[in-house]
Image 1: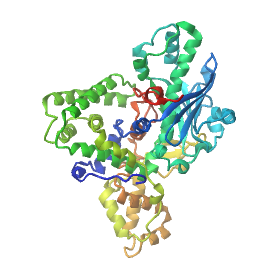
Image 2 (image 1 turned 180 degrees about the vertical axis):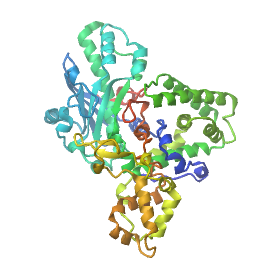
Image 3 (image 1 turned 120 degrees about the horizontal axis):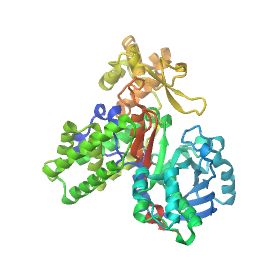
Image 4 (image 1 turned 135 degrees about the vertical axis):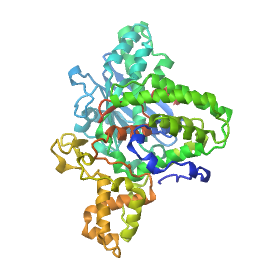
Length: 557
């Protein structure tokens, strides 16, 4: 771990779910947001540290085009969202990564930009990948309007009426981002530049701060246009309806390999989550206040499900299962004691036997809600110094490596990779956008450009080599003769000390669902309303029901 070390509670150890249960794609693809999700961690910090908020610039015309600056200031630093609103013809509006124009583009500036900074950014930020930003910027992003809801809200507000609640809740956002880049991409500040800053040291904090401020901008912009049209008769969105508006996101395979390429980091995410669940399950009893809080969030989960729609058959089935699961949970809550005799552990064990994976993971998310004082500290343990896991211990014996494989990688060595269905897919990087893609090995060209993401196959190949190797020689000797195994040896040595670092499934199988990888990562972000549009890209909602900067932070004067 980097930063705060995780301090496991000894009494929770026996309640912790093992990696062979947690690190399966089907379960990971059923995760829900929790108290430890990065959006919620960010907002708790901003509130606790009494950050200030100010809209420093609003150069937006009556037509809704121009630029704006939103600044949040903490104990040591300020960060500013620089937003550009554009006149985008309908025929150019696209959520695909190959788009070249958007309704709005953004960057998160390190500090407060002056006019020269804004003029420089206005030349590059609207171009996104085709432009270049500097190490004074921490993120680069863009968004498109949800055209149907956008027009509806403007029409209603400009005529002195509130938007239709059903329309607002069915869509959930005014704009949806199609990319939020950080960590050195396109000239932005590298992660190493900012990782020692407490407020952005956690995973994706700068990027998610950008999205939170984009949400505020989307509200201000739609109300500004409504005022320009309606004049004195125009109104603003009511506070309760405003909270129901989040930020949408269209996400494809670009983020999927992240979980594979960052094993130590993913281990720390999972360990923190599983430690939190184990801590709550280990409680001998529950207070009346905790039970009441759980029931409140259970009702919110039922409401969220009523607003969660999808047209994809896989997700339709899962939503049906979740609906049935919530009804079963409701009966359990009404008939079983939640007070004593390890109530949360009993509830979870019942769920394992009676609920789908979707319902089980919904339950563990809800179980954490009453126990912020018990689990919130774990959010400080979810970063990782990945350089420490880069080095290979060449002195390790082949026998020790075999022990690691046989103890933790049976999922890999029992697969017959000679069967076509077990190697039906391959991961590659598209030449056009340098984005990850998945190909069909026996139906499409390009397998010669395959990326090294078939971890299970690599482990089995190494396993076979180890059985043929002289056990008296070291791993260094083996790698001198077989350098193709370096990548796998490194991962296995990481696995020995990071038991949740590997996804325990075949990532090139015919039935592998990339959306399971997306769902897992997005749940850690804090996303809701996961809506697959295929098995390779999804729409989600972020920050729905969260407070806005002017509600939660002090307003700078």
